[in-house]
Length: 422
Image (cartoon, rainbow, N blue to C red; front, side):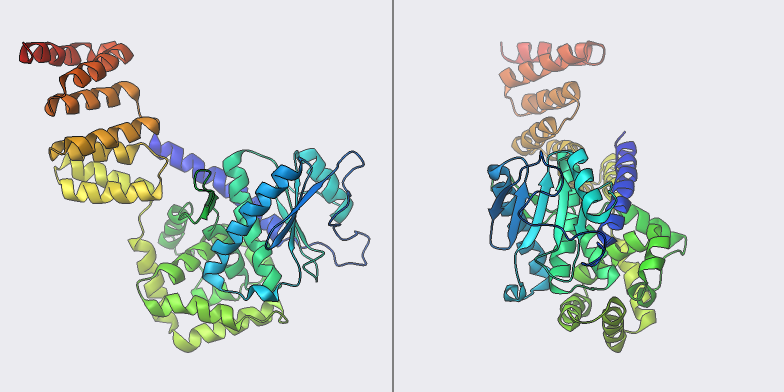
């Protein structure tokens, strides 16, 4: 069931991300053409639409849902900006004006606006890039929360990068945009935090096994046309290359990103910036060694599904330490899944760490684990630690939730408890 969910999620992500990359790569016509530049403070979509504005350190945000929403979005965007700039360290004083974001409450209004501005609509958020920051804008609309957050992080990064370097290398622009897609605002802390995105890892490893990946130096010089025609490889591999540079245990690769960013020129064309970065890269790294190191890095990365499979196998073999390692890593990759905490509960129980097992089981329950199964595990755990009243309560819930499965065996333990407490 979990494997099916993962595959379906990756399929939906592939469709959505391909739309986002096409929209993000679609620059608006230059000023002076038949399509006017985006306006910043007035309504261009339709007479009925009224915008409220809010300003923050780096953004001017307009929303047709009121000033409060504009203020909240501006604050979130500032948080995203800070996360992005942890990797780029651009001098913020170089910004010639605020980054403009326009949010519509529905897709129809979004479509109307884009038709007026660029003569067509888009299926997802779009960054309209003009020669000046003041005239450029990111145009978005309301949709389901997780999808909204992913699209916002992706396209906000494109806007951020192009504000400093109008023509950055394609692999860097799209690779980092995907890398940041799971960056989110934490409602409890009010802070924006980076979360690792490995949605494309399984795809990249499959492409590698099929010998379909571009050579690194080739990927760095890919034209926009070639990137679009080879999107199924370019997109995931660009993310993988960024992940490799940032997370490789070899610090030479980590430093390359900093050095590459420092060499980007705001005045250079796309081709010129790509050549500058590629040539600098080859000056310090041999092509054969890079290809070997890149593939070794990818082979060493494990998907959530791989870690769960490995953990289940190790648990079945009674290798509790290896099982614990696998499920701990899996929990970091997918904090929303109940599978890792449930198995970590089983492992803690097997080690006699009953209080810890109780915590893991309860966490699994809050994440959506099967209630009768988890209540039974909680009951067994409570019984082992001689918390008999709690044990009876959990076991009764297991019996009520799935009588066919737990009536007999949970009932036996409840009878045993009655005998133990006489």
